[in-house]
Structure formats: C-alpha cells, structure tokens
Amino acid sequence: MPVIAVDKPLHLTSHDVVNRARRLRGTKRVGHTGTLDPLATGVLVLCVDESTKLVQFMEADTKDYLAWISLGAGTPTLDAEGPVDETADVPELDAERISSVLDTFTGPQQQVPPQYSAIQVGGVRAYAVARAGGVIDLPARSVVIHDLTLLGQSARMQDAPRTFAPTAQGWTPAQTGVTFTLPEPLGEFPTLLVRARVGSGTYLRSLARDVGAALGVPAHLAGLVRTRVGRHGLEGAVALDDLPGAPGLGDLEALEFPRLEATPGLALELRQGKRPAHPALGRQVVTLDGALVAVVDGDGERLKVVRAWAG
Image (cartoon, rainbow, N blue to C red; front, side, top):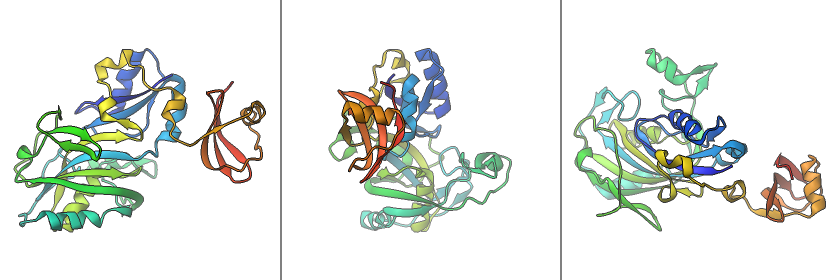
C-alpha cells in the first residue's frame, strides 16, 4: 500500500503517468496528489491501492520548483507549448530589480489561473473553451507563495543552466549532478532562473506571466521542474520504468501531521466514528502500537474523525 514519488518525464500528462502506473503495478487503484503539466517534469506523488485514502491529506502539501521564465514573449498557454503571440523588447534588468519584483509576489496572493487549465466554470473545463478559440472568465484565486529566489539570468533560454544538485537551500546549478530535460525553446529570449516554494493551487505559468507584467514585458514559462512535494524530494523519486519494484512509503510514514498515541479505548471510539474528549488542537495522526488509527481534527475539547483505518 505504498506512496511513491515518481520523476515524471517530459510530455506525459499526470493522467498518462497514473495509467502507466496502473499497468506496471497491476492495480486500478492509483491516484496522484497534484497535477504536473505535460511540459513540466519532476516529483509526482502516487498513492497506490489502499494508500489512495491519503490523497485528500497530501493535496495541500507545499511544493518546490525550478522555473525558467523567458521574457519578451507571451503565449496563449503561458508556457513553451506556444505559439508566441506577443513579443516586446526586454530592457536591461539587474538582479536587484528582478529580486525586488519577485519579493512582491511572496506571501498571500490573488492569482488568475491560465485559460489553458483544468478549472471548471459552469461544468466546462477552461482548456476546452480555450482550445475552441473562446475565453472564459476565471476569477482570481487565493494562493500562497512562500519563497522566490533568483538563481540566475541568461541572454537566452538555450544558455540557461540545466544541470543541478540538491543542497540544504534547494536544488542549485552545479557542474555535475542531474541534467534536466526541458522543452524546446520558442526562440532566443532573455530567461530568468527562479527557485520557488509555493502553496497548493499555485500556477507557475501564471506566476511567469505576472512576473513579466511586473517587469513591463510579456513572458512565458519556458521550463519547469518540481523538486519537492511535502516530504517527497526529487532525489528520492523513482523513474517510471522502475515503478514495479519501488517500495515507496507506508501510509503512516507518508503523513506529515503531528502524532498522537492512543489508548485502546480511544482508538476504538475513533474507529467507531465517535467524538471523544481530548485536549489536542489541529490535525493529528492517531496511532496505536505503531499502527495507523485515524486522522483527526482537534478543537481543544474533542476529536473529530476525518478518516479512520480498521484495526
């Protein structure tokens, strides 16, 4: 019943990866905890068999990315799928100016999602309207961007760093390490390399658009690698072809909430769906002798079961 971090290859959708995982693991029960666009690579967390119960608890995990933002060219999809539909000359930009602009995007934000997204409005997917040539009114959504760090600037995407190594601060350009496969550039445009830590629901494509706008030029996301989802780092992710033998993490290991050790009586009450008195506050993982009992929410007086596991 493992939770497995997979390194998603370029050009596959998250649904493609789930379908392949079902075949490779010999099960129909596979879910993921957060979509990656086809032109993005990196950590896609899969929950297999009974672990699909965990998806609801892991969708809100923070995520780390490496993002290549090309300036001076906009696209309808906001990424390298293209085509380029807007261009502008890019002024000279120093690192201090760029970093100060990036700082304005940290913290709680209102972000307008891309037209080419899976968001539904009135039962219709936004991308379906966009592909038919239409435009749908997508209201801004509340997101949180925890950190944006400028790692470098290049005169064109073709010259931007592609080889990285993990450090205590996050993945950083390096002489040796992992060389990422990125989409073909849409032209020769000045490119920023940004390391990002964001909350659930944040679109890096929208961020690229908005950073460009703040700098006074159109922009698009020329490349994206997700390097972490919650506790799952890219350095521990498995290749898609290695899925059949991948051990992954057990349910208890995969959950990052504080742990509360139960008595047998408390465990029984929770498994029966009762709301026992308890002073715990916030979301907790309840265990009994090392086994997962329940995920609960505590209000300081009682525990409310969010999901329970049979003993």
